[in-house]
Image (tube, rainbow, N blue to C red):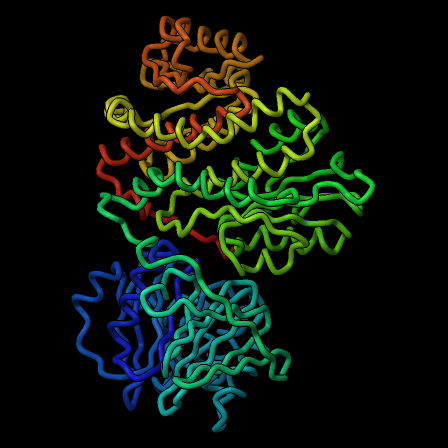
Length: 594
């Protein structure tokens, strides 16, 4: 989940590397560093944010270098554990993302051979392995070093006296940016947007030799051509645009995201993806897999497909499915991943493919690994999302799931027409929620005083409760739990009281009476209740302590407007508590390790 970059060209590498790293801090930000080739190797690193490192670093004059911003896996955040890591002689510098499973064995072996390793990281062994195998051929030494490694990695190696960088990937993303007499390497697109829109995506097992004038890729020892892609995102898309935080900007972009994602499919002559086979079968065996926020979208997708198509659907966590999941050969799976690079999700896709399952992936990143191994891809068109807390990509995933299911709907024609009309009106409804953000901010100021919060929902809004609780806990550091409303009485009631508020997501559907009953039970335990309700719900106004009103909408689409309101609630709670909203502690954007 770390961010890595490399540069080689005609300009000073230092400012370019630091700028690229600043665009990758959503991938890790507990420490960072750079290494520059300038006769020898100069390294400057520390357990600080990139902007602090940039101010403190001395001038470094070389025109080739590597950089890293870290999310710690092996060893606590510290100056000595920060990347880049070097060999004994200080001739080789390495940056790495991933986990080396056999690093303890390699470390012990290298130590016995006379190498002195100074950090707690697994990455350091790579530099020493390259040193061990180096006999005048840099590329060969890297290949031999990687042959000893078990686990996932992307890495870039820099060596004094070499006019090229060597990069490799296995199970973690890595791209090469193509410039004019200069080339770049990075773990994600936003790092490169200031410099180029031309990129090459490396595949698993690729080793790339990158100089200022050329990029050569090898796979299994043989040269191979990789297609060049054009990135459609702009530099402005990845900037704050006057907002205090990326998260708030991305929440406010959601009406546009909905319009852009809908436009992708409304104008298409064919369904977004083939959920059924040529004979029309297959939906009954549909499985939805994802992790984190994407799993919450997938769980909502289960309700969406079951409601529209009237077939049973399973939704499971991808990281659990990898170890215990089962599916019938010939079935279909919808796999959701914001980045297209989530390691556990990619493992699940590979398992599905091995078992003869047809895979449809929903993702936001063109050319990502998931798109290259799935049978079909549905793009969400949300643009770059920088804040660690997912907002607009979650909403875009919901929209993609609606449009994925609608062509196979078994509801009557009049109902279907009404649903399509409501779907097209969603940008307006979401904007109405955004226009009420100051009211939501007022409720957030009260909620910020508590240390524990429950979220409840029922039916299609149960996943919304889960996602609302996740947003609150990850950016405000308040302990928050999401539950199906009926589950509170099976244990969590023991924690209710005047210091344990409950946020209730209330929809005008067949769950309404049941959630009213749950709220009455909660009120009997003296817990304050903040309810999200339809703007004409007079009953709930009388029952709850506070209400956030939501534009009236068909219950099937209520997760969209309710989720936006809960995103704003979490945002303003975190701001009230003075939390680092875009970069919450211990987290990173793209989870590329187990």
